[in-house]
Image (cartoon, rainbow, N blue to C red; front, side, top):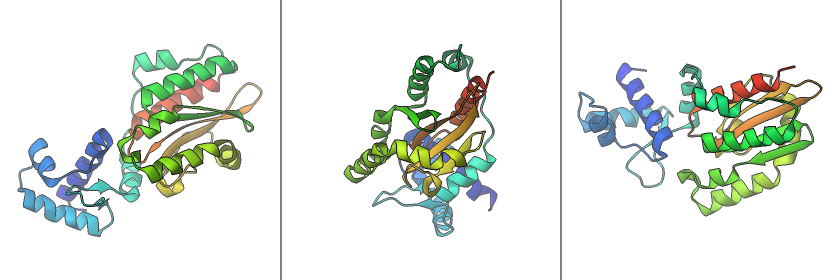
Length: 227
């Protein structure tokens, strides 16, 4: 990919993560001081769309990244460092204490603005932050709200189905690869506790801060793996 088109795609991804809105060529030129015209950026965006990196939602003038773009972004994005305030809030004094773990799950949901699923073992599933999903701008559609509600009704079954397939390190599953629906992305990992295997994951829109949310899951996995 040409350098300018790569930069434009990176800008579209970052803007979409930050706002949830389609990104217009004028935003790219004006906000990021691109040394080319809006017409040139629109031409580059048209080529990015032809190659499957971005798509035009409905009748909007802007574009949003496709699953393909986010999958590539995840491969290239650097690992984030968890802020000290977050690590202090998420730290577990007793990884085996389910009450304290549920409190940390609520903290994680509040920090990320996403939903959290926590299986203390394969058939003991706790989840919180579902209302966070319904507040995301891309989910503000009756059909998607129905789809999300249907998935949440089956969350115990879904976790049971995927439990044994999840690695003992954070896995990022985008769109069609997410067990919670093509409209979502999931960052999930199993962990080996003192006397049981558990699972923890974040569920959100395809548009999310993958680096920071992966760091959050990674931190908790290390906490939960303490013997």
